[in-house]
Length: 220
Image (cartoon, rainbow, N blue to C red):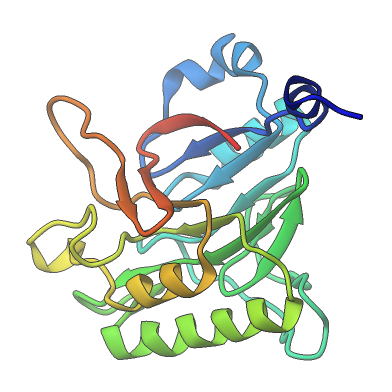
């Protein structure tokens, strides 16, 4: 019979490197090796060669969603393909685009939604109404999978939970309902840079909300 300590040791934590928006020069050096991530999650607006560098040097899964400054990426229609997308675009080699998808990596289930509020024309930019529709489809996929989602990975934050007041950095209302429906253990996002002292992580229900800019090391 396992004791609590034995169970904790047996079910070891997954070490996650979350990155977003800003290139962390230190990750090109020894810092990446010292962090020893089991999984890398990228929340958008990062150069593809940077992500390729991270995945090639760690040899662990890297899942990402596109940001509003990323190019348009093509995904195959996964409606009847199960959970995993068939990627046919030009994203970073060796990395998995989970925009609008659900994927398992390092024993965790990750759901993703890329893009920001539409403040002008360009790829990966959505109105509140458009994101509500995208969030509903993702929630439907999660329900069909009958899996508990561990992490919701998005580029933009939820409205009022880590967003900003200017038109380009308003968060999405739909993410409130999505978080409460999926009940992920973490919601990881980028898009909104915080200056000055680090703010504490926010919460929505049981979910911890994490701003990953430029990078965070997390454990689940």
